[in-house]
Length: 392
Image: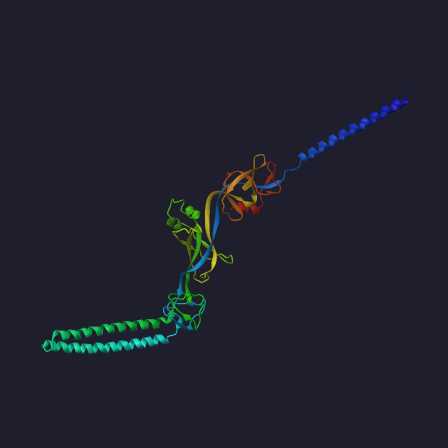
């Protein structure tokens, strides 16, 4: 009897331990679930979208050339005896640049002058003969045939004089061509040939180049698509589109913006089949000569858009070649939403073309780290810096 009571007591005690353990387990599980349910929602900065204006930039590589780049070539062949200027020197129209050997050209002038004198003497002699023959003809001493021969000789002598005078003019011009002058104001380019070098009109390389840099052209290219957009797909003429284009800027090779704005002047009427683009020319004033022919840079064309939705780039993410943002609904849950954007951007913001509407809220923090689809957040106002980016 005693043994049976002991067994019952032990069984009762064991059952109590099991029940207590189960109760403790239930309490612990409920407490953990309650603790998990009570975890605070993460604080995420959000913004309410509104229509605004954007100022974007389109950049194009450009090559700078002087308004006039004139290759200086001699008009006669001769050895260079003196170079009067140096590379990079500013010259005026008519200033002497080079002198060629003048010995043979001086000799040609002397020879031509002698030929003119001889021809003039022949004319005088023929004139006297013709006058005498005329008097004899008037007195019927000689026949008209004899007088006609004398007169023909006179005309021949006059023709020879005219020919000799033309040769003299040509010889003097050739002598003048030995002094090569600047055809316009400008800056002297490279001078590949110095004293002693042979200069010729047929040489592949010019003596130098004189560039009028008071104004310069910046040449760049626009694709066929760019041209169509510029003309509103043919709704207006290209000339009208060019006239209405805003002033453009020039970013120099060191990244500095040239202080004087330029104007797009012309677009070539032919699209290059190899590049699929047309050459465009912008004109810039260059009073200080900072821009030099042959330099490079980037043309900046501003692009203004009105009533567009602008969002920070950091508020977006890409998935399978599509771009998404997290839209915050009325329950403060984030919903991944696909959007489309303009290809052109300023490096900080995107212009949204579809997928978002004014008045919606989007998360601008935690993208790619904290946020996930369906997460409940605690929206907070963005800090000053993000707010300024969005409010541009």
